Image (tube, rainbow, N blue to C red; front, side, top):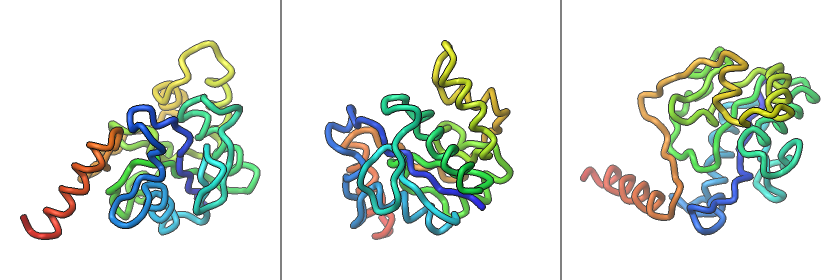
Length: 181
């Protein structure tokens, strides 16, 4: 069984407001991410928020640990609940292909260029704990190296929304595509 986890604990500094609540095509970015994982996973959690359209978990071991804190929380939950792996996505990764899980199987693996989008076996918790407890860099690169995760190139990479302008450009592109422009 695969647990889906939306990593939504970022501070949205470049976005200037709560990015998770920004609207795109009639739903919040958070809503889009939860919907994507709901179609592909046995259950979905949102990490790093207190309120969401799915059960929530706090980052582990504490807020402010970056994506690894969110992944650690999801992996701990997965291990406690008997899930074999966690499919993670960032709250702003709009436009992912439907068969994301199929593309990432078998894990550990991640989307090339956006390593927070990945498939991590529940046993990767040992590696994450070691990274977070160590003096080295708490980075996705360290997790990739520790787990031997493989990069996966998608034929249509997801959007990476860091600013309101990025979101507006994506919305404009989608309107143009839907009108055949």
